[in-house]
Image (cartoon, rainbow, N blue to C red; front, side, top):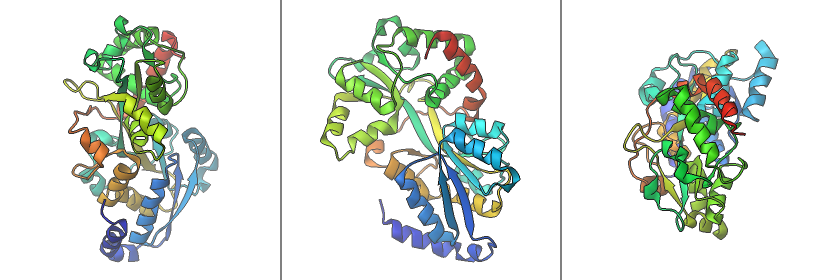
Length: 340
C-alpha cells in the first residue's frame, strides 16, 4: 500500500478550498465497527478537511436505541454499522435521512446503496464456505443450496440463528427462491449440523481445522486474518482449512456490507455527507481492504495480496436493502426450522 501520509497530503490539498467554506468543524460518529484500522480513516478525513471526528462506539442495537432516546438533541451525525440487516433496522426506527450525493452515486454501485439514499455500503463482506483440507473433497459442494443435502449429515458447523450474518444469508435465499424453499434449506442445514450452533465466525473455522466438522459458514475476512496472523497457531489453523466461494456458476457469492448513513437529526449534516463521501474515496477504500481484508465497494481500488489471490469473483448483485426487508421472514423461518 502506498504511503498513507502522502495520500492524506494529496487529499488535503484538494479539499482546502471546500473546507474553508464549512462553518462547523466537527462530525460526530456513532460506530458499531470496532476495528483499529477505522481510526486511520478518521485521521485521514480530519487531515484532508480540518473537520474533527468525535467517536462513540457500541453495539448496533444499543447505538440505535441511544439515538432514539436522545431524540432531536442527539449529537450523532453519522451511524456506522455492519450488515444491511442492522442498517435496515436503524432505518425502520427513523434513524436516517435521505442523502442525494452525486459523489456517492458515481462511486458506489447501485446494489450497495439504499434505493432512496438512506444509507450506503462502503465495504463488502462475503459469506463463504470453509472445508477441512485433509478430510473433505471440495468438489462435492459449490453452492449454499448444497449445504442442505442429506449427504452432509453431521458435517456442518455454523453460528446461531440470532447472528445477523446468518439472518442476511437466509434473507438472500428468500429473495432468490421464496420463503417456502428457503425454509426447506434451513431445515436441511439444521439436520446436517455437527453440533448445536455456537461461537463466532472464527470459532467455526477453528472447528473445521480441529476436525469437529468438515464444513462451516463464515465471513471471508476472518479467514484472511488467520492467514496473516502473527500467531503461528492461527496460521496453522488457516493452513488446514480451505475456502469455497459459493454459486460462482450462478448468481454469485452472497455479499453483505459495512455501511453508514446520516442521522435524521444530524447537527452537522454537511460534514456528515462529506464524511460519507470520504469513505468512498480511494484512500478510505484501500484501508478497508488493506487493513481489515474487506472487499472494496468502489471498483478499481487495490485490495491486498490475500484478496487478490482469490481472483475475480462472481458476487451476487441483488440490492442489499432486500436483506433487511426479508429479515423478519428469515427470523420466522429460523424459528420454524428449529435453528437455535
